[in-house]
Length: 165
Ligand SMILES: [Fe+2]
Ligand SMILES: [Fe+2]
Image 1: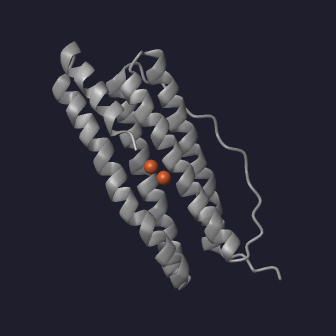
Image 2: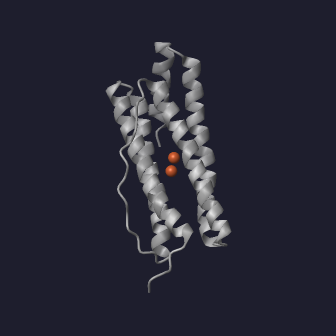
C-alpha cells in the first residue's frame, strides 16, 4: 500500500542525498590529503566518508520502514579548493555546520507536522551533529596551534591516522 508523502518524508529523502554528498566530499578531501602526502589525515577522512554513508543508510532505512516510495536525485560534484591540511579541515568544519542547519530544519518540519516518529529518528542526528562539529572544530584548533611547523603538522597527521574509526 502506497504511503502518502508529507513534507518531512521529502526532506528526509533530500537528506539521504545530502549525507551521500557528505561521503563524497569527505572522500574527495581524503584524495586531496593523499595527494598532499598527509596519509594520516587521508585515512581519517576516508573513514569518515564511510561514517557519512551510514548516516545516509539510517535515513534510507527509516523511509523504507515507513513504506515510502524512494526515488533518488543525482549527487552533486564535491566542491573543494583546499590547498593545505588546514583548509581541508576548515572545509570539513564549515560543511558540518551546514549539515547541522539542514538537520535542524527537518526537525522543525517534523515538529510542525506533529510527526513524532520522524522527530525521534532525527533526534539521533541532532546529537550526532554536536559530536561532528566538536570533532572538526578540535582538529581545526590543533592545526591553528601548529601553524606552519612541520614537526607539529607531522604529529597531527600521525595522530589523525591513529584516531580513524
Ligand atoms: Fe552525516
Ligand atoms: Fe558529518
